[in-house]
Image (cartoon, rainbow, N blue to C red):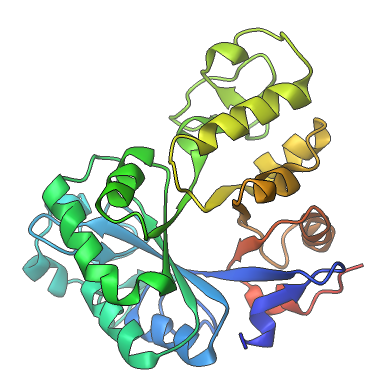
Length: 306
């Protein structure tokens, strides 16, 4: 059984997983560190997430960014660093440098094998650059011993397709932010998709050039087509605000529709203490989401679901 503070019980009996972002469970260890990962595995949380980026000469570095500057003592792109250079880095977290170093994915796999925990570990693949086929094959071999315990997620559908081509048994989730998203009007749209379409969403698809049908029909056409970018995808992860905006525009059954297609829905990120967080949490649970990514899993788990 997963830790009771890592799940929510929905009114219909479903179990909603609280995805522990960066494996920060107690807050005593820096995010994405081996100590934080061990803590989540020992606590047997339902699900936890770490970021991974390709290193230059093999393996992946566990870090929240494709650049070393923010979360480590290094600088520059992760993909230009070697394993030896990575071994000399230290974690930078909460305006402090820690003794912990950012681990390699191979080290995380070893910990998963030893701990024997039921925790599902989401590997958030940060790279937008195409992975070389040789590295994809090496990655599939690396995670093979713990394949049933990990789920890859990425915005880069091309890398997910390569991974599934090499080993179709690997579980993958897709985040469609490069193609389709929503941010409040007073905030700039992300670099991709790069422009706001006729329906008010960040979307450069031809269907977004003019209003040609009901907004709810447009939304389902876009969401359903995006799932087909990664044949075999088992999860779709989307920004919390995007999910809510689609609800307000008439597509309130997104999670139900995707579940009928065998795809679970995850939303990110909701933290206790943010504006209207309890109401937003209740809304997500009633809307049948399966996974909620958060830095404050324990506080969310204790919130009443009405």
